[in-house]
Image (cartoon, rainbow, N blue to C red; front, top):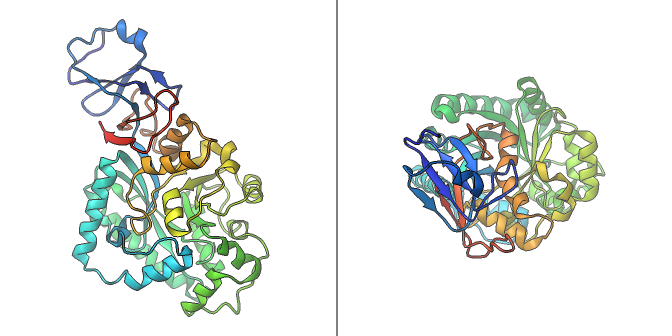
Length: 406
């Protein structure tokens, strides 16, 4: 007989353990610390004695807590302030105009509100981009697990050392401030915003420390245009920032294969957005490294570029696909469920099991969060309820909602 003191017993129409097939009318037993004690189907449940535990019955799907593998929490104060659908270059220009118009108090309050929204939306872990220290104090007291990507910009080789040294100072502050949420990597922002010298410094450091890497990838078609012909909106944007492109020569190839050679192929690397990634890019990556993950942030893609990745070309990479929300500067809310709805509405290549795996176990695997991602005995992955689901077709509906149970 199972010891039932301080236990919770939860059932729903479907339980998606992620590590195994979905269980129709399944049961999950959890202790007071959120640890998975057992997972049962109807037959197994009927053989146990749980009469001392109130049964929590729900309609819908129960799944593990979500992993948001790409967010910019520090930009939360820019919600609804940056115009939509102007392309990445336009988005960046508009963001630069307004990002210094708010007080520290306003920024911190927005961060705390957004962080609570993620928690309420069933997010248990976040890969968060940091350009400054504004999110560190919130992370120190958070119930969410954070991995911090200290992101660098610097297109000019002669400033590489200075920029990297600033990141080292920021990492010191993170370690002193963020408590248990101080894990970090120093990473490049994107292919078009980092010089070869700075790429090399980042790559060497990540290799030496065994750090994971994240980089924005092919978020706009003009990123590829820049590397092929030194033209397009991204080139014009860089020039408008006063950068000198005279010494920079285009590779003649798409952006991603042009810069991935600067990064260690043996480190886990997350390519984020991939809106204009094509089959040839994926083939190149598969030949270059077996340590590449791909992150979709579809609602941000629609907000900025009004475009989505070609999801069909990723159908054979289901174990390496993750989900991110990007920032409230480029999204209306920080909800993994809303991202899954957008993907489902725009492709039929992914089942419910596939989608939930992207939102849970794949992200946990990337960050090596072994206690998260799936319902397995001894793990503490969090428990989410997705209600208002098409249970016959196992599809999300526009009105599908998320509730954090554990």
